[in-house]
Image (cartoon, rainbow, N blue to C red; front, side, top):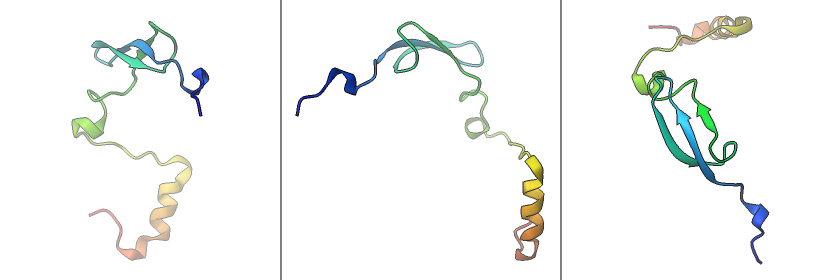
Length: 78
């Protein structure tokens, strides 16, 4: 079975700009040749890489409901 040209997306060079302004060129399927991808989160700022703490947002009281539902299991903060 022969491969069709449309089986794969266009793979081209783009510029990536990190949150601190650092730029580098890489190959990607994002946008088109020469486009710029400005990152909002990258290894310079994300807690997963920096070791910082992340605050859990309680949207609609979900965390509060969870904590009250399972309070008797000893899963509370230590």
